[in-house]
Image 1 (cartoon, rainbow, N blue to C red):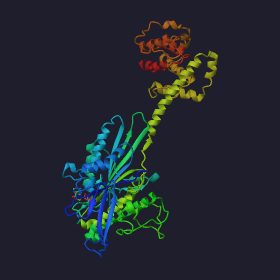
Image 2 (cartoon, rainbow, N blue to C red):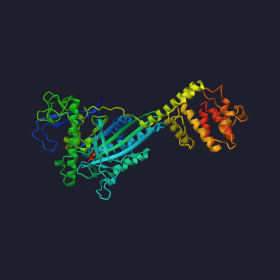
Image 3 (cartoon, rainbow, N blue to C red):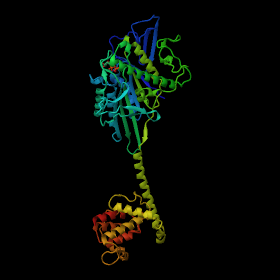
Image 4 (cartoon, rainbow, N blue to C red):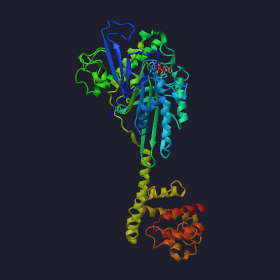
Length: 577
Ligand SMILES: Nc1ncnc2c1ncn2[C@@H]1O[C@H](COP(=O)(O)OP(=O)(O)OP(=O)(O)O)[C@@H](O)[C@H]1O
């Protein structure tokens, strides 16, 4: 099973710490033992030696790596998977000011500085251009978590606590099979790249930022930009759905070091608390990945060096987390519900998703504590397995439509076959079988024919007249309707009963009708030899609008020979007369 991929990105800085190295996939840091980098990096307790830290990543981006390379290496593959139906998440994690927003969103200063989100959108729409034949929809949503409350960044009114327009806050609840359901978050259809990029910019503009001692434009919230894709190939009942989250987490901040107060302090506390909960989830998932709670796992202090190792870091030490119970065992419970952020990322961490983490690192000496802790966090994340599956769903609507069509085709085929079979029966057998029609059947036929004549039912066969006896009953009803309309009832006005008259007329009397204009001269199955001329005559009669007795005669004649052509002709005739 693939694990979460981790990448490290080193932020360019003027005064970099001089005792670190990076290779293609490793970060090496040498620090003084017992030095407390977390609170006061310049204060050294009794310095008894050096600690060598080694952290492994899928790729380490040096400070000179450009945005394009970061995208190509860390994001392209995952966006490709998203385009084929896999959920994907890219999240940036690191201390405040280390370059998370720069990596995810980019900088507006230069076009080449655009970040992963706008680049991912360009790639998505470019790829979709070559899939014009598919039924495709792209939706965008953008959510912010500020002080543990969810806001819709594409619905900026949501943050104002106005009583006039009280926008509901975004809520995340647990969905089936470990998924999460987000409520009150608007989802915007983005038919083209321009719309999508504008939504991204609009959301970015609405995000909570503020100046802090560490960053002039510090994101004071976590932001989750989501692209949802739904595709369906022509003539397929399968809908493929996937979502891509691009997450710019707010940065951790050592408040004791930065000395912030007031709102900044409150914000920092919320940020640190939610990152702490995120870490709790990562620890639980890492433990799960390593085989569950089989006993206390090794734990060593952040900077302690095991006697038998030269380097610390998870590639050798395995796990550096905390025991969660008094006996030192780890709970198998994954505490997603502790915070909105962990609820939101629930299926991105250890769920049905391909996930990439980008750890942003600051190599200034005063930030070493945070840098090491970010690297350590990344090592844990790297152990988490994701269980990504292609998200395919059956589109019920399209399947029902297709099956209905097929049923109608098959029913018509059965009706034709039955008609062929009954044509060979003698009159008595047929009459006996006709009696099998129930009163309910007859009422149904009558209702159907009424609707058929006024155009409410387009095709009697697909509406249920598949049985040859019902078919004949329908013809009988139609005949009655014509006779009523034309002859004012049972009589054609001459005193002679119409049915008597037509019965006495020979079929050959209806000659002289043009076949060229009939449009109905194709041969009906089973009637090829017997009665092609009757169909032509009938169609011709409809066209020429000849007298009632002729029509009635034909109907009467057709009463014994089932034909869809006749059913097609009668409404035309009725609408003409
Ligand atoms: N790789 C980089 N190349 C050039 N400039 C960078 C790079 N990384 C970060 N910066 C610059 O450093 C500053 C801080 O970066 P950014 O705002 O992205 O940090 P952050 O981690 O998102 O911080 P916070 O958590 O406070 O929001 C910005 O001015 C940004 O343009």
